[in-house]
Image 1 (tube, rainbow, N blue to C red):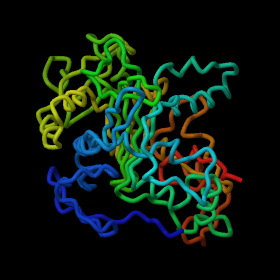
Image 2 (image 1 turned 90 degrees about the vertical axis):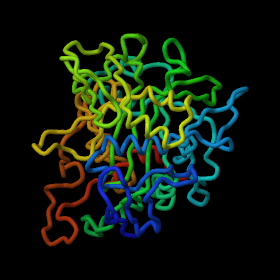
Image 3 (image 1 turned 180 degrees about the vertical axis):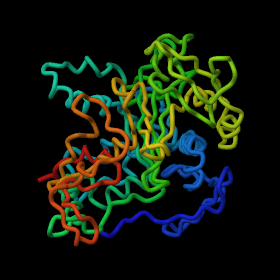
Length: 435
């Protein structure tokens, strides 16, 4: 394994004209690619925009990877045909992390495609495990909604990194720990850093019924032949060293669609400086929807901006495809653990973070990703014992034995307990290799 320190990038311009030379990747994106890149998505490599206007960056990224997939990447689902966006043709967790991984025959990108198979929402399952430590007998239905489920996708850049560095099975993670820790147990200077083109995406679907229709959401047929609508979406990209983070919700959290997921803007509101317009208390247009005093009620959906509509059109979205994607609202973006005053940045989704939205921090939770010397993941999974999300600055004690210090060590003075795996919690699914 080599030293995977993130490459330094230099933006050609800051703002809405993106042009970044990426010497380590051997290409330059100054305009959107003319040909559709279904493996990674047609997105601009622009950490400058990610830092200065993360809402615009995240919408640009989502639109780029959400173009309709070409016919050769649409598949039979019973008597129907899938309605795949590009990202729905990427590798999912089940494919990336096989139940019986064989290092001699790892998953191959070209074998990945199949209709989606929604699984129970992982974060809610992990939270249930934590809560059961405090509340014996707590039943899954108490916090895990029935119907539908999530699928985690990753583009080829992210997939290739996981396979190349043997992170798809438990023993490979143990080997990564051994490379990252010197014989005395301190950091060796070898770090895992995904390539700047890496993108990971978590989608949550519910069965099409009631107000959730093919006319007002992105929908697809799954392997079970049923039609599902997209109700929640997370996306992370390795454009900056600690990744970019964003979450969207279906605009069905509205009074005129009462069976949507109420509570979209609960706790700390919805912020979108680029793609959405709401009304403030005086009725004036605003890019912020404030949380209601009475939590758990539907919120008005607001409207999309002319800038977002132009983004759809420039990406070649058909009228029907544009209508599907016009029904999503960016809940928030995150590029740091805290704001300039030191207050924790909170970003959460009423579907994927149900029950702990009020403390949710995508960045802090994922930054907890680490493995011990056996390749086992940090058992906290980013939660506190009361089932809330860790947020704010990281605590070195999550990674090191702070009682075991050696100032003479070059790459870190504390002894390692958990080796960081660059924010990618999917390694939780890695199993022991096939015997």
